[in-house]
Length: 76
Image (cartoon, rainbow, N blue to C red; front, side, top):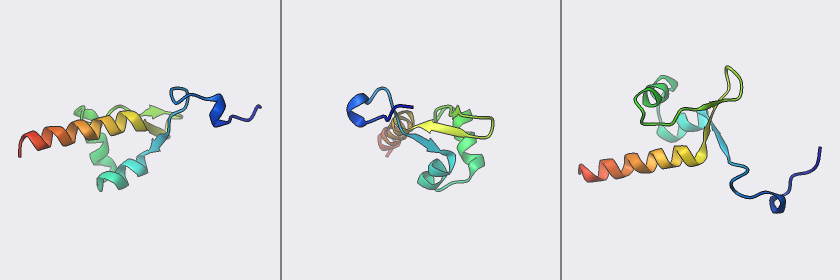
C-alpha cells in the first residue's frame, strides 16, 4: 500500500473521526446521554466502522456543538 502524505490529500478526503469516548469526555456525560442527544437530533448520527465501533465526523460534531452553543446564547 502506498504511503499517504499530507501533500497527496486534500482536507475533503480525510477527516478525523472521534470515538464515542472522545465525545463523552468532551461533553462530560455518559454514553446513554450521547445516544439520547443523537436520538433527539442534537448530535449527528455516528458512522459505524463495525457494529460496535461508532465514530463521529469531527466537522459534523463541531458544527452540532456550535449550533447548540448559539441556541443557548440566544436564550440567555
